[in-house]
Length: 153
Image (cartoon, rainbow, N blue to C red; front, side, top):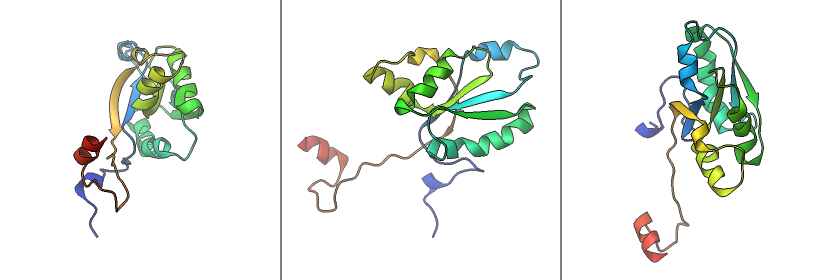
């Protein structure tokens, strides 16, 4: 059985969530002639073994070959990702702390609860995985399309 085209992934990139790799103050890192010259910390605001963890593992296994530096993962789960995200927001803006996560804890969480960061505290430097989201209802539901569901709401 052939998987649909949208589910095929190049290399070891997992088709996870709409994942954003945010680098704190990217211009500061780019200004260093010999960047990176020490270990880079990647903060995962979720527990090990989840979708985000799986999504970036293949990438951080090969990035040291290109960067010349090791990448260490620091799991900081809790509060819908806001604990690790807050730690990333407080990190020195030197390009040595990365945040792996989804747009939900960078954009949605600050809109729905009090957290010590805002979306403007982060700069996106790339997307390394995307997800296909689906909307589904019970088989016997009266709606067959999203438009029908919305029209009936």
